Image (cartoon, rainbow, N blue to C red):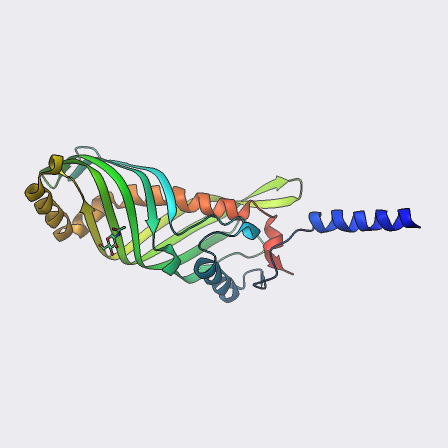
Length: 247
Ligand SMILES: *[C@@H]1O[C@H](CO)[C@@H](O)[C@H](O)[C@H]1NC(C)=O
């Protein structure tokens, strides 16, 4: 009898491990219930920006970015070799998820997440060399690029990945688009620390922020795409896709 109980409790225990699912608090959503998914996403951004093991969410504020390379050839008016090293993305905790599409029971369909970012900065070390709208630029030091009231649209479809515990979702064909209301650039220590030249260049960059952004937009978007993809893939690697939903 005792042996049977033991066996039973062992089975239950094994079962509870196999049956690991999306945490119950907050309550999970039904497939495709985009209003509910919107609320849950905002909960995680606001309350769990320091990370949450329950859904494999890494710390998103600050979000560490080891390296971003932006290299544009002479055919671009912004002909630069720009490298950000050991940067943090700051301010994601104040981001609002504004709209959700997809997340139905067919994970291979199109999904979209629209974020509104009031104030998000990329801060850290940089080095730059090249020409911006015919002006030569060079320097290395600390930089701060801040997006103000920027919409970020993330679109992807899911790729089913068969694992021991079921079918997981991996992001596929991810696309990112930024629609900024304003961008602020700051590059410290330009031109070997020549303050007058550096101040002038920073003023020039900020006066022409829109035109410059237009030129570097796709490089920036593809850099952020890798970051967003890594965060979301880590989240969805934790459980089979169906476990993120109530049925
Ligand atoms: C980056 O710049 C923005 C404004 O342009 C500012 O609000 C923010 O505090 C700066 N961040 C750091 C770490 O300097």
